[in-house]
Length: 331
Image (cartoon, rainbow, N blue to C red; front, side, top):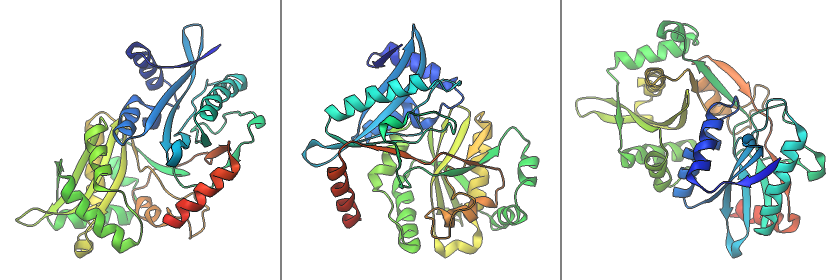
């Protein structure tokens, strides 16, 4: 077995095929995500473990570099290993990544594999990260069902709110207008007291992430946008990523019909699943940062999927603690 850092177009093409056919392949380990992160100014590295000519494990690494060239490394929703969870393969892959990270003045390596049974070696001093960078759970809608069946499995309040929006004449349209979306985001973050991203971040999501889409819920003769949704198609999954809405039209229930039309669009694009991206775990306390949006998403039904907690290998404990303190103060 050998560990390889991919560089050539042919290697990337081979990886793309492998990822799309792997049960734990996802957007966050894809070439599309790699391109998007690079558009945001981050560095990336893509490692694979190969037996002969076959890829058996992989890890797309996103590098966040800060002052004085120090960095943190992250493997979002990875690493991805063989189905039989061959421990030695993952250990060797992580060992090689940690070697590269140490040479890059990396403070800590974060990773959040989708596979709950992935076996890792304790020699790496793996800890729970205690971050909420990636949701610990999500809600998945089965799009192989008919539209009638999808509506039927929703909570009664979900179906009712969709009808309310439709009766108010809310229409849904695709758009490229990030300025209008950012206006809604600014209102939403101020109202709900959380920190959003810069307008450039959402612009890059729409422009640089292949498969991304923007929907607006509009009302009135002037088609005023009163809610917006940024999502992305990858493989057979449509994912709701960012949403925003106007409080002035809260009674119209626009976000409900917006989600419904996003599901319908995903289904029309050939997706078999609709991923609400993040909810709080079922037993999470009310203080959990995802608790509020979870109540909204619950009304659409679906299956709750819980993921393993994000892990971290701290390579430079003192420096990493100082960086965490700095970010806490700045936030």
